[in-house]
Image: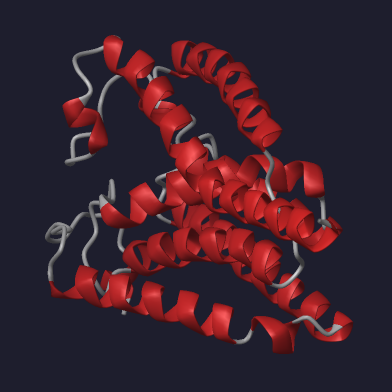
Amino acid sequence: MIAYFSVDEAGSFEAFSASHLIILAMFLLSLVLLYGCRKWLQRPSRSRTGRYVLAGILILCELSLNVWYIWGKRFDVKDTLPLELCSISLYLCVFMLLYKSRFIFQIVYFTGIGGALQAILTPALSYPYPHFRFIEFFLAHIAIILAVLYMVWVEGFRPTLKSVGITMVFLNILLVLILFINHLTGGNYMFLSHKPATASLMDFLGPYPWYIVSLETVACILFLLLYMPFAFSAARGKRNKHQLNS
C-alpha cells in the first residue's frame, strides 16, 4: 500500500498505454453521462448538489496532493506550488461552482478545457497506474472539464466572443506574474522557463523563448475554436428569430 503513495518514481508513465487509454475511455463516458443527465440535473436542488459534489472532488484532489507532498517530504516552492495553469483553473472552478460566478466561467471555460484537455492527452506525469499521483492527476483534470461543462449543460452558462479577450488578458497578466515567481524560486511553472521533459504540444512550437509566443497564438486559436459552437448557435437563433418575424 505504501508503494502506491511513495514519492520515489517506480517505473514511468507511458502515454497511450492500456491504463492511459482506459482513463481516456472513462473520461469520454463521464462526458456522455453528464450530457445525458443534464435535464435531470437542472432541478434547483439537484443542480446545487451537483455543483457542490464537483467542488468537493476538486478540493479533495488538491488537499490530498498537498498532504502527499508534505508527507513524502516532497513539498518545494520550486515545483509544488499551485501555479500551473490547470492548478489555477482548479481553484477558479471551485469558486465558480460554489458561487455560480459567470465572470470566472468566462475564463475557465477556455483555460480549464484547453489546459486540462492537453494535460489528459499528453500528461506531464512520472507515476504509472495505480500510483496515487496517477489517479489524482487524471481525476483532477477530468473534474475541471466536467465542472466547466456542468455550468454549460446544466446551469446554462455561455461564453461570448468578449470572453476570449478577457481570458487572453488574464493569461498575459498571469504570465508576467509566473515569470517573476519562476525567477524567484528557480521553478518552471506553466513551463515558462523551459519545455516539459515529456512529449507535448510545445515540442512543435520552436525553441525557448519563442515557443512562449507561439503558445499565445495557439491559445488564441484554441479559444476561438472552443467558442465556435456558441457562435454558430447564436447565429442560428438570430436567423430563426428573423424568419419568424418576417
